[in-house]
Length: 142
Image: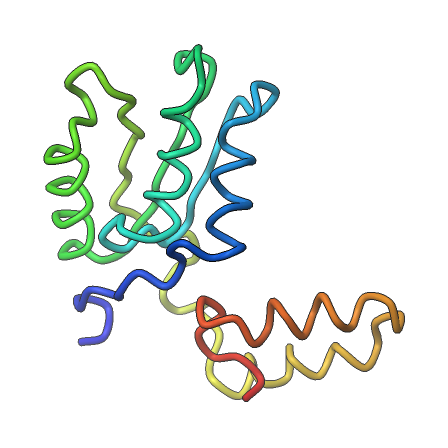
């Protein structure tokens, strides 16, 4: 079952990870919702890195949503090992689906979503292409 396997960290020491760290660091960011945290080694770690650099960590609330019980267990183990909850910042971990399984998109629906590119203004297409072809997009256009 694909849902139960761990997903390797896809966002690490790259531009997107830097952007996530920077956003989480900003004092005006009060709430963060991460959907699909997996084991916590990628975007979760980047967000927590940004939060840890804040002088006032109490000003942010982070929620991690993960559908897989295996991934939730790994995420909780990772957070415990990293000191989260022992004087560090601890996000709230939720074992839940963001979309009911019966409403998840099929592969052909994801491909159709990619066809939206043609409808975008020219200046937005490069941004779309970069996001769509990023490894974290999963079923990207390619």
